Amino acid sequence: MATKRSDAKIYKIPVAQIIPGNNDRKVFDQAKLAELAASIAEHGLAQPITVRPIAGEQKYEIVAGERRFRAISEVLGWETAPCIVRQLNDEEASAIMLAENTSRVDLDPISEANAYALRVERHGWDAKKIAEVAGVSVERVRGRLQLLLLAEDIQHYVKTAAFPISHALAMVELDVNRQRIAMRVFNTAKSMPLLRFQEVVAELYAQQIKESQISMFDLEFKLINEAQLEAGFARRGKKARTGAPINPQLPPVKVTTKDGAADILDRYIAELIQQGHEDAAAAIGTVYNALVAGNWMGVPAGSVLAKAASDDTTAGDVAIEKVDAE
Image 1 (cartoon, rainbow, N blue to C red):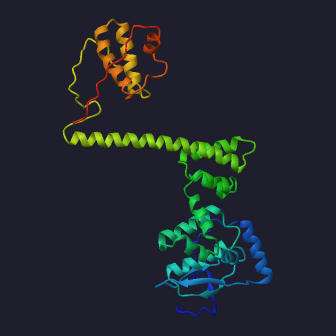
Image 2 (image 1 turned 180 degrees about the vertical axis):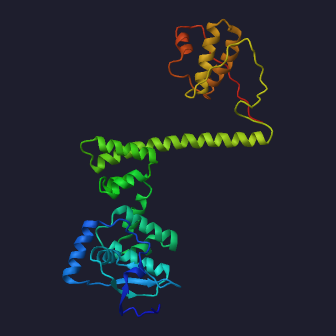
Image 3 (image 1 turned 90 degrees about the vertical axis):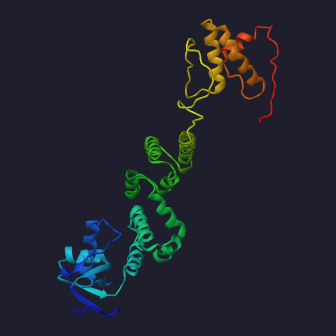
């Protein structure tokens, strides 16, 4: 059979020579195929199958009409299929397939999203081009593509209509762990209107941003410290060398991740006083008082030192000398 065919002429091609294309529709409902086959048996095939020849082979690839092909070959057992044969490149075939599939209401949102993503990846189409070919709005295309940002298990819920598309789109900016938290909240609630769900997502997103900023700061600190180490001098961290003297007889300084500098100094001075290291406590206290008085730090809430000093009327003002940096 010649490979060059007229677009208008209908050919009866043996079904053994016809193979499926890379269809956007991956699942074919057998009950609906049976219904379609019954309709074809009663009324005939109203629209032929569109195929394109495969170069170098006596075979044809389905471009449009795979459901019809399956109905007549698998259910009705036809040996030949009425076909329109067209010479099409990959992009042209992809456009025809997309237009046919998106014109049907039974293409689920995730399959539709994957169909759009395939055109972006393979042919470089933008949302406007996809919308024109598919016969849908640009906003719909963008929304469907956003669904692919969801975790696969959540995509499955959207695919099977177990989770509303509106709610799914509300949480595409969450990381996958928080998406699953939002899903658990949704499933736990007796009722979850979109507005309430958006509030849940907003709270999770605020937490996500906060954590990402902390991570960003940690990364900045790490990179700066590494750069300083490469230069042979670390200004922060355990490898930094301040040049300040130390006294091994004093207790170690205890630091937690929630502490600010004032918390550390206040707590350490109180510990020194309690253990009888008055001179050391006074030396550090002199610096601490100067920093507070100069507004470089504030007295922490719940300060033991401040509470003890509130009854001491003998304490005088702290003298501070501000020196311009050279």
